[in-house]
Every structure is written in structure tokens, then in C-alpha cells.
Image (cartoon, rainbow, N blue to C red; front, side, top):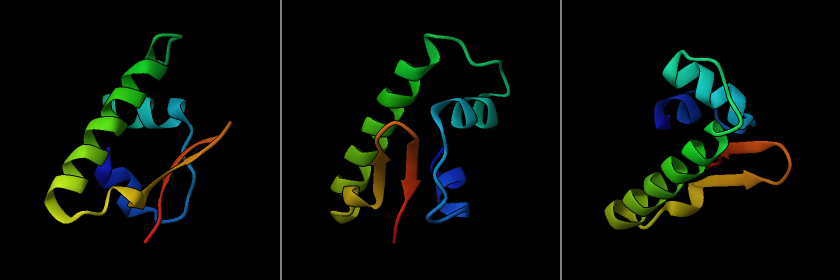
Length: 68
């Protein structure tokens, strides 16, 4: 998931796009929570590693993006 976001900096990915790209499975109504949990875990790891959790931005109503 992090590789997907980093590979396309500033591009906003919907939760459906992230889920289908990373897991190669159809998006369901329960998939949104999966993405939110993984984004939270990525932010926690980025914060612990380099203090840069702010690099993963939430774009309200659209999805997530990576900002340098």
C-alpha cells in the first residue's frame, strides 16, 4: 500500500482503488475499514521510524495520497 502511494506522489487514491490494487480482490462495503486500519498502521510506523506520519494525507470524501 505504501509503495502504491509513494509511486504516484500527490495522486489521490480512493479506498476502492487502493483495495483493488493491493489485494487484487473486488471492493466490498467492509473493505473501507480495512484500508483505514492499514493507513493508521502505516502512519504509526512512519512516525516511529522517521517522524513523518504526516506524509500520508487524507483527502476527505476522495481517499488518500502521499505528499512529500
